[in-house]
Length: 282
Image (cartoon, rainbow, N blue to C red):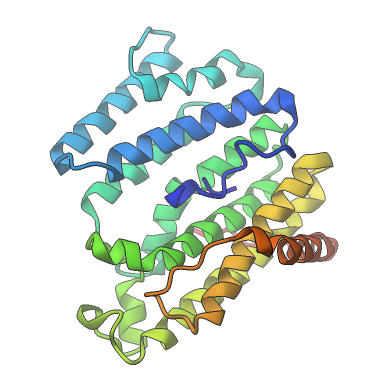
């Protein structure tokens, strides 16, 4: 359920998404992708990026107050204001913008709690809106969705570590560097960096599979879609492991991964039968 860079596994065009749900999924994707690009793409100054994101927030306030706005990105959220039966407020969209604003300025994280707080705003709102689109509202579903979405966000960080380093951004928490006796200045050339990354891998892997209980609360093609979303994250983790946790090598999914993805999706479906409800992350 994670959405290129942050959103490359987003199921916007998947045939598994019923046709009647696709406009809502597309609106969510376009909002998230558009706002993320304001924070991360191009050569705008940090001040200009923050100003553009402020405009998105103002546009959201207008839309959910039924006031016209010409902000293109905010206008994608209008779908959810018009479809009030979905029960989606401005909160998840504002949470996403809050995370993107943080990305403009923040390049280091002190500990996992701080990183999980970021993921709670950058990834989890997407999963919760997706559940609303499909009429899934239980607290247990939200907790399992949060586990999957946060895990996918972490996996994306470890997948893209080499790209982020070039941008001066390191998502591995400073406390983890200290725990593994790795100097962040030497990352990723430090001889112990693979041991450090293995710990991040294992943390994300445990969290990802802990979300399988969500599949018990879904049905139809959406259930299969989410099983394959879990499988996509699991397959990236397998490739990170195959690279011996070397962050200078960026793993990607290829067409020939299809059979393995199917096996992993079936594994997720099997695990869902007995998986415990994951604890709250923050």
